[in-house]
Length: 160
Image (cartoon, rainbow, N blue to C red; front, top):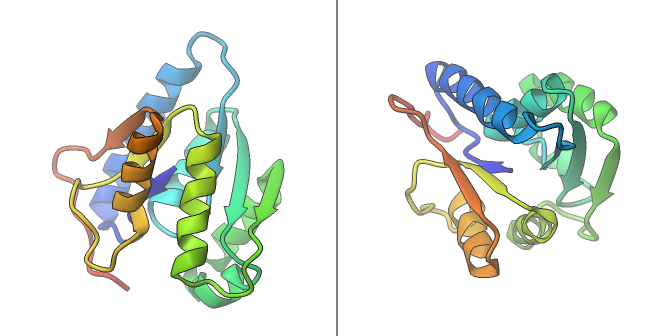
């Protein structure tokens, strides 16, 4: 899973519904569902909750040892902790600090284990580089199928 962190409240609802539909389609024939997420606010959290709600397993990939302390905003800490506790597997990448290289490595890790990359993405390149657009490009280069989730009416909120 990759996706935008800053979504409007209405978009969060649209994405939650779209992910529920997508995941139901993936598990309809009894296949095992394992979702991999960095548990960031926004799309990552919505996806992780949808995976658990669909009866799937959650795998957490944390980009660095200080990821929670450095990047998880206080208003998201309880959700992050709850989802981390629900994860059946946790991988902490060998970076001390949450920095661009750690985030790129996390994207690469997600793509390397994915059979399908779910991307909550508006299709636009990132102004900062990396992020969702980079993960989608990495998956496409690797031949990993990508499911773009961006429901009609979806909007990004201003960056935090």
